[in-house]
Length: 252
Image (tube, rainbow, N blue to C red; front, side, top):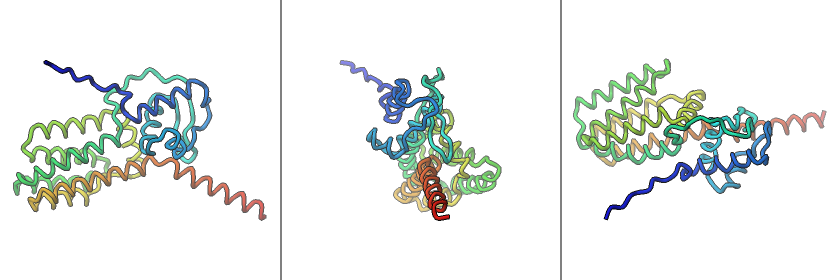
């Protein structure tokens, strides 16, 4: 008997489900055009999800033209109906990076058992190239070459295909493009020292060390993304400054 697997609908992704609920609230008039949405922490509590999930939901709404993120002010409703813009591989950057952490950690572990001295030299060259390219804005292209080379070193075509697909999603998903753009605008570039640590771990030929180095690197990438999408911290800082001005005004 053949069992046909039913693909999950897009709304099964948590951030999309949250985005759809917020969009319905906007369409119903609960949040009016020009009105600021509740703070990130409040939305996370209201929808019982993490703050990164709220951030991805907000970016999905921003891509659809429903809201506008104003740095230092908050998230504001711009339209009541979403623009008709098809979403292609609309996977969020947090979800993608989490997948990379698990997949590429095992890729690095396997690569450690196969890597040659010549391949290590090539990885060293890529790290040096990354260092030169970062100030010119080309570090991310070298970053992709670096990670895909490690997948090739694993000598496993399925793993290579998975890594290449993850990078394709990273470069094409509107969600990913938007979040990594925010990250670049905050000055994030591929960290050379973290990539050097991965090469050093591969040089030991120890799968555990290679896995740990790759997972550590991608965990840091998640931290950079969290920092790049932090809206509420700016709002809180502005609120504190406003409160201080108010106190100073009363005491004058």
